[in-house]
Amino acid sequence: ERWAEGSAHAKTILLGEHAVVYGRPAIAFPVTSLTLVAHARSTDGGLSLDTPYHHGAVAGDDSLSSPREERLAEAALRHTLDHLGRQHHGVDVTVTGRIPAARGLGSSAAVASAIASAVARLEGVWLSYEERFELVQFVERIAHGTPSGLDAHATMAEGPIIFERGTARPLPHKGVPPLVVADTGVAGHTAAAVAGVRARRERDASGVDARLDAIAALVEGALDELRSRDYVGLGERMNACHSILSELGVSSPELDALVSAARNAGALGAKLTGGGQGGCIIALAPRATDVPELVAALSAAGATGAWPVTDKEAA
Ligand code: MEV
Image 1 (cartoon, rainbow, N blue to C red):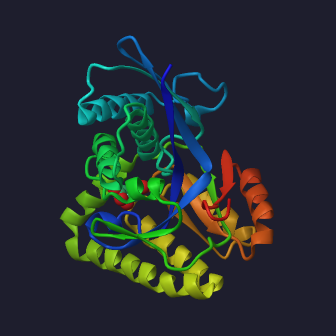
Image 2: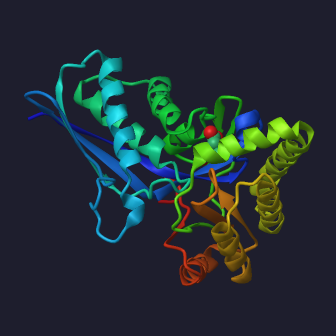
């Protein structure tokens, strides 16, 4: 029996979501503690697919019950086989692992990336980075229309990246700051949030563009602070970014509540991360040793999940 595996991890955006859709830069980190593994097996005929998003797969965990993610996984499987010219091959794919769906953590990109890798390996085809990226972007377009490409790159990256106008570069300095991602437990709607910003920009182009430029300036300045590990300065930028994203209409009461809880628990900064209107926040602890306490404080404040941000190098 022939089989192969592929995996992908979650991502979190430090600064730059939404502005990145309009050509501004963004900084993202892999979240290697949240991964998906796709196991592909050749069969006599037909396609079969099982994912953790199958309804009721994990009792009591809503974030892992997502018909949308199931559909995206199926689209990824079919599109990968088309791309490889193997439409008629029988394949059975089982995806395991855990990345909460619709939480701004890149679950749709990760599920596509893991499936594309596993199926290409099964078929004995080596996919270039660009090919894999394009397969993921195909699924991202189904998921939310006009993806910048940030999520696809970030779920495939080994370490922190800066992304601008279609190009992702690794950040030059090693090491991830003491960041925590926490889930409000409310599904976010990236497509709706992106559409909301677009509608606002149609009404008020100069007001929205000024805010997008302000986010871009926060990203540029953060590069120096990451290099010098000036986490006080970086935290202030995260707070400023959350205010701007709120003005753009992409926060929510639940996100604001977790952001406040993080700051009250001693975080140097906190903001929503990803598309918003639900989903997750990202918060910066003063030191790595403060991370467990911040995780505990966010859980106590009602977060349905809270995870330290680690990359492959740290893991
Ligand atoms: C979603 O994770 C990030 C957004 O900037 C959308 C995109 O980049 O396509 C909101």
